[in-house]
Picture 1 (tube, rainbow, N blue to C red):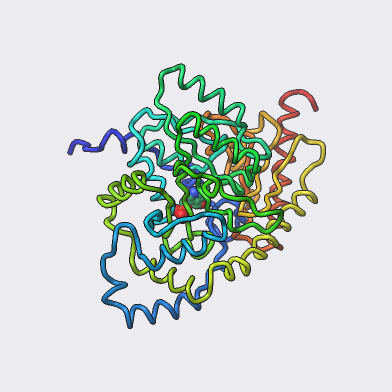
Picture 2: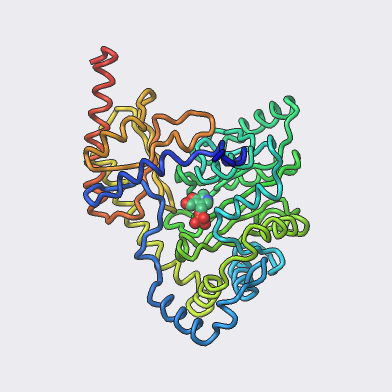
Length: 409
Ligand SMILES: Cc1ncc(COP(=O)(O)O)c(C=O)c1O
């Protein structure tokens, strides 16, 4: 039989990292690889009760098809939750999506033609890059600094892309506790980013899975909350704030942009599962999302603290190693000396029964070989200590081997 693959899918690769991380699922490996939320944060008893009740008593509604836009009850509950955060929205500004990965897909379907430019961080979220690739986006990377994207560099890249006659569409950002770097964009940069987007007439795709998992420092307004033109499309997933298995997110978009997204979603899945939407809505109405967030933030804080303490304890000093100290979210980002290839090093790490995500997968420009993403969410504080001890052994051995090979030792 001849292969009938579309050009689009024939060119799409599976994530090499996700394939590699399958190796780390053995129980004796301490894995800092997966970006999954901590299961102890899932309100499973409450969910079980609500599920039993609504399936028994409201089955004609919750087991039925729903509106493409999503459940009105859920959207209203989200509008009410967003209002004190400075985001004024009605249910008509919210689209429920099958989690934010679908939102990324819909953004491309609605706004991208092959070759259109999206600017994104170096590094950025791999799943977004996979969605962009499928739609033949021209991805232009911009370095991240400790307070978010380097906006001088963004302006340079914009000028270059314009000179080259490209069609510029959007800037993709994860302003809070970014995946993979854990970096948060400063308020000044949020404002300036919006100004740049205005001046250049670009959309901003603001992906905000972690912003509500802040456990240190001062809350930061979303870029969306500062936008009075409707050029910021914000994605808010419930994966990390409630349960990833619900596969639920909302996307905030206004007017014609919303209409385009609804038209893109209809042929994709008609509607997001009504059952999970009602589970989430009832949970929020009965228990409150803010109350739940208050309970789960300390869980992540304890794990983050354990990881930072272990890095300080075990990583060699003066070896050119640095890491971020996130004020929320799930990830620490580590930089090893230039020249160390963390994809190669992963084999050694797996032999030492510890795993991580090599950073190169998060760079659209082929860089980042010497970087690592460490997720603390799935590991207990004690196990984090042991895992970082093992990782430090591997890092020390790799640096020494490199020095020997270079004749500097
Ligand atoms: C930045 C970012 N965006 C989107 C997603 C996708 O999440 P979901 O599809 O579960 O909402 C993730 C998941 O890790 C993420 O880190």
